[in-house]
Length: 307
Image 1 (cartoon, one colour):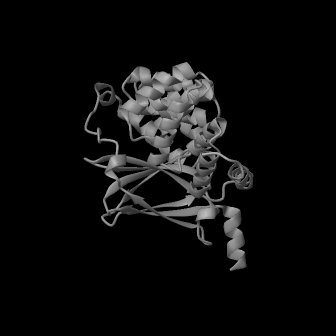
Image 2 (tube, one colour; image 1 turned 60 degrees about the vertical axis):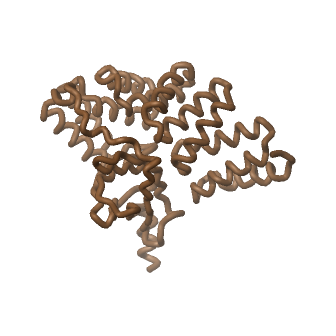
Image 3 (tube, rainbow, N blue to C red; image 1 turned 90 degrees about the vertical axis):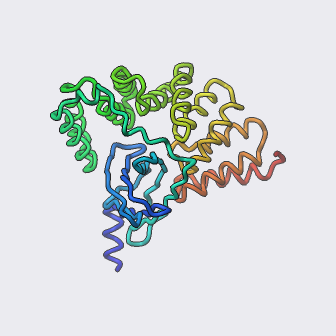
């Protein structure tokens, strides 16, 4: 038993097992929120699905139910939420209020014109991302856009990888190329908004993130980025509104909206609200590396008068 536990610690791989509630057949995908990764599976009639050999990290779980739409949820894969054998059990409640409408039946002429050769390169790229061979994935995606310059998803994935590897200028270029191919595409729009926030270009980010929240009002990422944008523009009241909505949609979201919200409250002298936001953050992020620092901050905030 001791040897098995030690080997598991070295391997640091986890087995994620989930159940959709109510039980529903669906397509389920898992994307790396902060590092390149992609994997897909199916949930059976019992609503159960599984992802094996996951590395520690933060992931975005996407559930797609045909005719109903798409739901997103942040999943943290760490030893803090796993069993001693590395198993993580989650239940995903399919709340209609958090579903984005199903638009899969809408196929543009640009998509129809993508040749099979480019689609095959894209498929190989996704396979390489599942095995975390990022360089090979980039090579396949580059070939995909060479064969089909209008390939929105391929440009978007190139941008996502660039962003996650901190090549922000490249990420901006790729997301803009994706939007040139389809100005109505959502993923490169919200992702471009994120790059612009990171680069501190808040006026430009405002346009992208506002359109993203209007286009997909159930996406926590769009609301969180809009909150960051308003904070960057020194509009804390509006920042609070969007950050609270992001938390309502996905309280464990990888952008950590509670931390910025706590900063806003503390800046107003609303110490109890700031402490509550930090406690909510820790409740949804067990094992957070900075927990002791946040606990100390909470203690100080609760020791001072405020609302």
